Image (cartoon, rainbow, N blue to C red):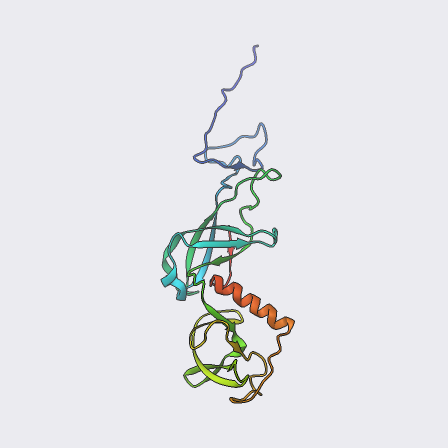
Length: 231
């Protein structure tokens, strides 16, 4: 009896991507709708994450998004905000965002450096003010409804109290929108001992130098705190 052959069936997926590990073996019976092999889009890759509703006014498609992952600590992946959810989660008071980041395959990794399901930290830039004045948060003190800091007068090296207006805040840092000019010397440590009119000798140790360098970096681009996200 001559051997019979079964006609082969060719299926075309609706999008291009990377084929994963097959879910069935040769000769297995499958029914309509049974998954055979996963197909994943790798470039670009999409990331979903939440931000607090207080930032809703500054959110819009096209904003710069930077993402990092502990699996690739030396790399920063940049993309754009794609979609802002029209609703706010009642339980968390946050809004869901969708970003898209290029994930082109490299010579050593044909599937792209980022993998679906990876845990990532996302930084979303809502505004850019290159000339922003940023100070360590510990330099500020509060009296009623006013915020102030101690400034060292350049001519007499004496301490003077100065009321300021605080803008955006980052962990350990605060933006000063009025009351302080860039380059002015302020008291960061020992504010409880310093008094207006007192003569002081500024000491710039390595810790303060690092803080000033961090402040200058943040002033170049103020962004939101990182949010956890999964692509």
